[in-house]
Length: 307
Image (cartoon, rainbow, N blue to C red):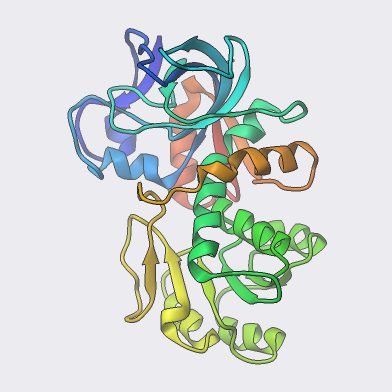
């Protein structure tokens, strides 16, 4: 099978390559998925650089949609051919950017949700949901979500709105109107952001979720909130830029919330939730996708297709 992976650590553009290798076999409690689409995330490029180092070669691609291709011992409730969505383990010689992948957790892909849109969901939904849990966002709360042009930020704004919170977001022009349509209050980022946020909110907000991690934003976020420790920076790959800000893990293995993935997949199928996909590429064009992602100008999710 074809798989995108690296044999040494370094810049993703330098070390990644498409290999032919033997398909993985599902173990007890696992299924094998024939991949139709694989979402790309900043974590993929961090893995190439040595994050969570291990034996080489290593695969990339942490979220997929596809159809069930094989069952491990003890698996029930699913059969070969069923459409599924899944997060992907990232410690083996292959991962989600492959024609076939073995996964430990999966959820059905609802009718009406195409593979590309489905593959954009797992990491964004899990990370956003867990971040909002950590901040204690509930009905009646007011929350600032910084960086709603990112997949996680866009998902977090919608999830917080569904919880009944008042949501103030920072976003560029690409998604500002769409965010307003679902009920968020939107202002631009950059110079004067803190003043604009407090003007919208009628004063400092209680918690803020930082999904953008832009240089210089930490100070503005601290000024927008009542206390800097109420800023949660969602990253497993960088340190907080302001003393007192909390750092949440975008890729931690404890208390992951993939249990809500099925709910949000159904909402996406019903047109009530989305993670915006900027572009999708065939596997052969992975370099174009990687260059666009690393440039920071993707303006939405990037997805590899396996046609």
